Length: 168
Image (cartoon, rainbow, N blue to C red; front, side, top):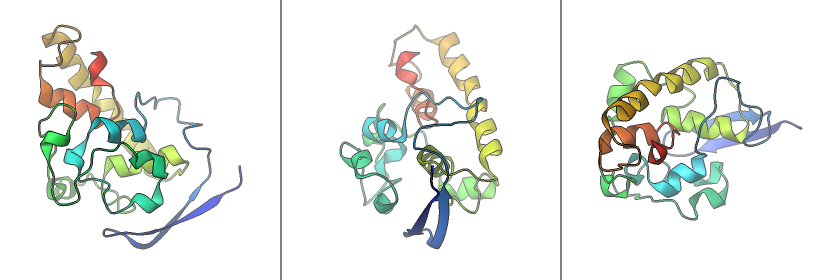
């Protein structure tokens, strides 16, 4: 695959660029097997719909065809489970969870990784993704399989990390 240069100019990044070195959705690290694509996540409803409203030019237009978004505010009703399962970005920054190249956090990293970018933060983000399994274990241990009304906040949080919590 020929490298493709991506230039980013949105509300959180100006003049940032990176290269896509892998085909979209291919050649993932063997320890990273997300159950949902970014397009599927956006269509289901994640991050209160506020997450990707100003950076559509960076990603394929079809990701946004059925995306549940709200440019004005974070609206938990847009989430698949209809509840807030997000912490404010300020807390993510305070905890050191934000990589400077991905100022929106894990989902921005995942979108770029999915598109084919590989970077120095990949290993850390994949470890964080794998750590979410503890929440899946809690859902499995406390809910009947398929009972989507059980632990909706935790299910929504798991969905934010590309695990399909509808199957648990």
